[in-house]
Image (cartoon, rainbow over the protein chains, first blue to last red):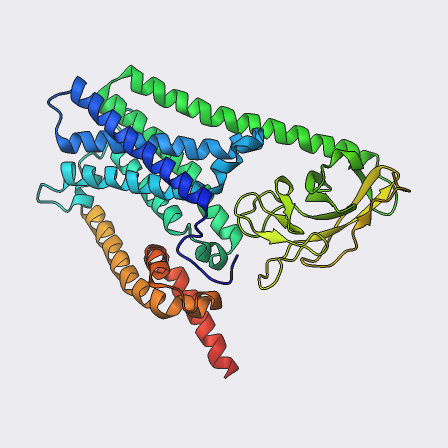
Length: 352
Length: 74
């Protein structure tokens, strides 16, 4: 998991995912190119490349942004999440092609430096409609580059997860700039209501899915708080019934601000922090494989009794106390330091 | 116009310094920063190069801090 850095941790699923993704990229470029040649037979190769890569990168960015909320709404989308960074890097490469072709076609043929030309060819920064949309694309591309360049686990570890996460949340800033880039570009150059409509539909889809996922999360959190109101003394609060948790699976709880994954396995119950040390993946959506809690995102593993990754790995998460009374499960939301061993609660015939 | 020229030139200088730094970083610095990066393949080093060039002021500061800490220990 973290002892050796490989260029890519290949798995059969990743290979399949990448093949499907590259097939989609190739298929899109062929289809888009064919349609452009049919409807615009005079189009130059450069313009065709700019249009094809620009629309493809924008479409891929929408897919990337929709994967997170889709997974929170329906677990069947989780396989899309596991290899999202390859999708992100590929999207950046497509966007880079779009940017380079634009820079060459529109700014590299004069006397001025291409970047100087980019920022001086249109200086109507005070106008909403005539705003220089290409500069928005340039800054968005820089942000996408930073995310693609730091996508390797080395950067996650050495920039620290909070910094890395904050950097990668910049995708939403980049997305906002790209929406403006596309909208202004369409308004200033294409004047196509279809393109404006498609861009608007994309924005609605991204915002709608994020909103739906947030509502679902708020309902889940509210449920946990209602359970908490029935708490018993000594800091333990009611979590759920034993039967509510499938074998080798978990229930996600938010109690007292703590995000907890409560696992049932081998007639035992253990609770650990819900967020994986790797990329904050939801451990409660994983399952126990070979005695280890396995993160659904990238397979990082933790022992349920102590929240430690099995040797030789060294990731650790917080642990919590669990008690069973009858068929009811109680969790104390006070976290123990990362990697602290806590005895699991036993499910016996007497408790049931 | 002159201001933009100046900013673009600063940007190019930043990139040039980043490229030189990143070459040193993937050769020596990465392993200083993270013991797990000792003996990594050249393919992996190549993957670290772009971010090494882009984030060179942050990485240089970290590298210097580690070097100072090691020299104090000795």
